[in-house]
Image 1 (tube, helix red, strand yellow):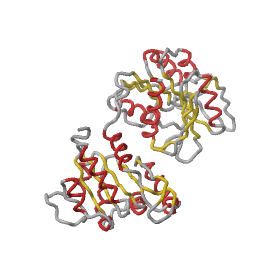
Image 2 (image 1 turned 90 degrees about the vertical axis):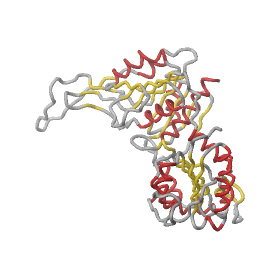
Image 3 (image 1 turned 60 degrees about the vertical axis):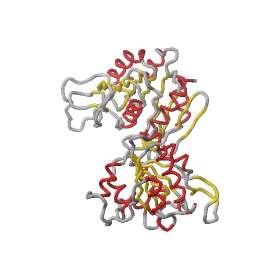
Image 4 (image 1 turned 45 degrees about the vertical axis):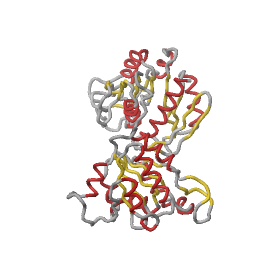
Length: 400
C-alpha cells in the first residue's frame, strides 16, 4: 500500500466538520498509514473518541495528564513518531495557539514539539476566517512552513454562505500524499539551479552585493532532488547549509557565475536561474584598501557585468527548459514578460520584492509564473511550496 510504514498524527478540534476527519482517518489507514488521533476536549462533543479508536486501532489521546499505556512522554513520543502532522478540522482557536506558541492542551503541545511537516485544514465561520487576526495567524504559520489546504467556499453549518468550509477528506488526503510521497517525475533528468547573490570587489576588503539570501534557489534544488533529479547547485556566498545529495559549485562574482553556467548549461535538461547576479561591477579594483581622505568624495565607475541569462538563452538546446527569475520593484509583470522574450526563457518567475512576504531573506514568496501562454499569480507561500509549484510547471513545459 502506498503509505506503508508512514505515521500520520491527526489532530481534531471542536467543529462540526470533525465528522469528516473520520473519513480522513479511514482513508489513511486503507492506504497503509499508521494513524494516531489527538482530540481536543471540544472535539469530543462532536465525535466520540471510540469512533477514531475503531478506525485506527489505537487509543485516542485527549488528556495531557492521562496515564499512558506505555511509559513515555506521550506528546513527545507522538511528535517524534509523526511523518506528517495533520489538523482537520482546524478552528480559529488552534491557529491562534500555534501562531503564538501556546501549548495548553495535548494537541497544541504535541504540534509545537513536532519537526514533521504540518498540514492544516481550517474550518470556521466566514467572518472568523476573514477576521484580520485569523489572517495574520495564517500568514505567520505559512511563513514558518506550515501548509494549508482550504478552506473552501459554500454553505456553512451556521447557515451562512462563504469561505470557511473544511476541504473534503479526498483533497486533504491528496495533500498528505504529496508530502509523504514526493513525485519522481524528474527522475533521470539533470537540473541546474543557481542561487544567492554575487559579490563584486572594490578592493581587498570591500565589495558590492545585494540582499539575496539564496533561500529560494536552495529550496528549488532540494525539491528537485526529492523528485529524483540529478541536481547541480551553483551558489553565491550565502549562510545556508549545503543541501545533501546535491552537487554544489561555489562562485563569488558574476563573471564566475557566467563561466560556470556557460560551461555547464549545455548538459542540462532544466536550468533554473534563481540567483541574483550583480548587473554592474567596479570598472577597476584597487589592489590595496581604499583609504578615506578627509572631506573628499569617492567616485566609482561601474561597468556592466556579463549577462548570464542571455548567454544561457543563446546556448539553449532543443527540448531544454529554461526558467528565470525577475525581482522587480515596479511594473513587475511587464518587466518580467519582456525579460522572458529577451532571454529566450520558457518561463519566468516574477515577484515584487517590496511586497510583504516576498523577496529577499524571508521564508515565503509571492510570485507570478509567466509563460508565452499566460500568467498565474500564487498567494504568499513558503519558498519550498513555491519551488514545488515551479517544478510542476517546468515538468509540464518539458512534457508539452
